[in-house]
Length: 89
Image (cartoon, rainbow, N blue to C red; front, side, top):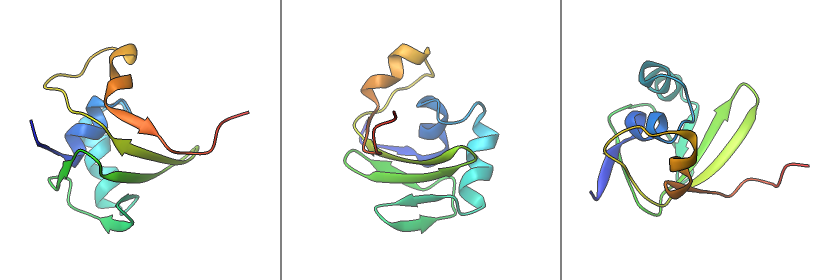
């Protein structure tokens, strides 16, 4: 798989709890792809894209490393992204 819908990837990567929440997050303009604000949940992302996501608890910066067909458990998402944010203390 070369590309995946933005809302689907956010849901698979467990950034949000529901796919509808992922779509709403994107539509409100809280997601940037490589520094450019994206408001279309169906926008295709590819490996190497850097997502900046504004959440209630702060901002996450994630580099897309891979994709998956199905949403797995919390341990399985580690292969989907690299966290580029500042280390938490």
